[in-house]
Each structure stands twice: as structure tokens, then as C-alpha cells.
Image (cartoon, rainbow, N blue to C red; front, side):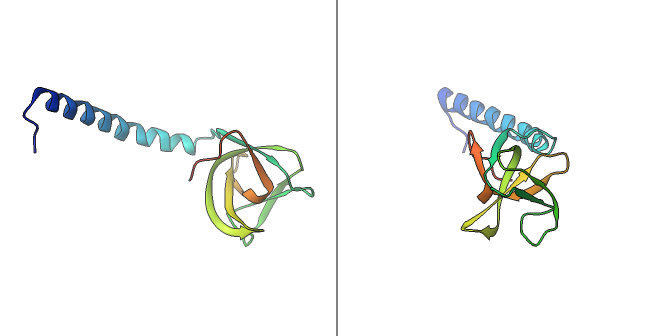
Length: 115
């Protein structure tokens, strides 16, 4: 139904413009998530170091590690294999986009967004 009052028409135009802006910005925001920009950070808390894997589970191969205390750059998070009570895995921005269990990373600042 199309509004008949001027204020109703104005509201409809504003909402339509906001929706158009959001739809247009969507692809740009999605492209940014994979474009090398990792806005989230965390610190490795695993005393023996943090294993870095090719996917979000312990079944994926180990492709590297990070030492205790290192600051890692996080792109986003997913639910995956439960590791010591924590099902979250972080996608790391280390040039290759690898994964590590969030159980062994403490966030610096806000928690990462969902992938």
C-alpha cells in the first residue's frame, strides 16, 4: 500500500534510500572482509604456543604456529570443533588466511564478527 499523506510518502522515500544504500554497501563490506584487512586482534594464551591450521578443526593439517603472547590479527569467527569447551575458531589474517581455536586466544578490544 502506498501512503497517502506527505509525511508517509517522505518516510517511504527515506526508508527506500536507506535500503538502497545498505544494499549497495553490502558487496563493499563483504569484499573488505577478505581483502587483507583484519580489524580484530587477539593475544595467544597457549603456554606452549598456538597451532595454526588450514581449516577450523583439529582434523585440518597444521601449517604453522604462534608463540605465547604474540598478537594475532583476526578476520572473523565461526563455530567449529569444540576445543576444551570452546567451539569458536578464528580466521587469522597472516597472509594465508589460516585458522586457530579461539580457546587459546584472548580478544584485544571487541570480539570478532561472524564470518
